[in-house]
Length: 428
Picture 1 (cartoon, helix red, strand yellow):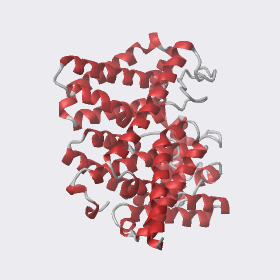
Picture 2 (cartoon, one colour):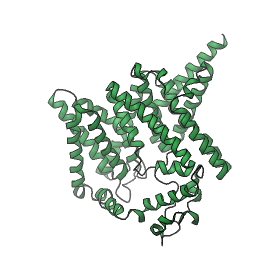
Picture 3 (cartoon, rainbow, N blue to C red):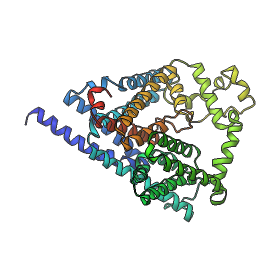
Picture 4 (tube, rainbow, N blue to C red):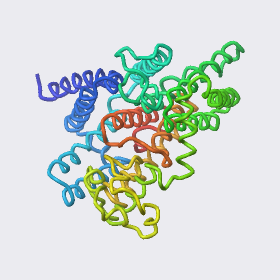
């Protein structure tokens, strides 16, 4: 057997294993994050080996990937300047997520059948979360015996209130895709069934009782109405039913009402003194002190307790005066853009914004050109993921990054598959 045939055979087996790991990734994201992280690493390494075997280097030199490499380089350099050896190693390892997304786009999800298989697994993961959330609401505990969280949030398959973020990410490509297809049918019964299913999905997000995931899903419904005219009336009616559910929360779920409505407006009324306001002010102080390169990987967590960053910007001093030194200090700033800014400075933030805009541009152009419903659902999901006015989990923890780069890679792969206007030579 020639060397060329051996390499082709290796690439084939690596691709088959990578596809299995990819379609199972939604389940590992929910229960088995260590396996999910190893799966992402395996797919990334397999793709790089494919690039070496096939001399397929050009895809790494065009489109969004050079900007991502630049961002990664800034994070590594900043970590080397400001952090420990551990921080530098963690920063180097971040490359796996960008390569993983590129692997999905260029190599792994290269057919409609593969994408449909991934979509089915995403759907099953979403259905599982919903079933366990409603079980916890109706029975009082989930299958592992865990009750609702102290603040009333439904935890679904988790011990802590973590059901909202993954369900919000799964919502449109995994769940909303079905009622959206139904309301496009001519039969009235199909339209009404689709409306009922949309309303149920929105009701579930409200009942879970996590503010930001619920707000982002409402935002996603708004984008649905804007993008897809044929479903606009039904989507708006479903959104109205979501507001009705909010109005009924004091009767059907008082804890969710307290958290979603009462505490939300209370925090908005005194935002600068709220925990989130304190976090954002502390992050801005750090960026003000280290504007070019930031503080490196995990820099916010390592330095947020230092007094330098409590009164770093005179204009913000009155906002934090009298606060405990620990106010505004936690493991990350709870906003993706502030996290990038504290990690890699304004130079890294500029590169990150370029990456996100290139992703959104490609997904939007593919959506408008093809009028493909799944592409629209993926575009809406990426808009939700990178909406700047949101409190978020840390982008580079596996719990978040696994979902984010899976959805981005899937959306880019679908855009690539949709037609000549999005063929490989057009860039990525």
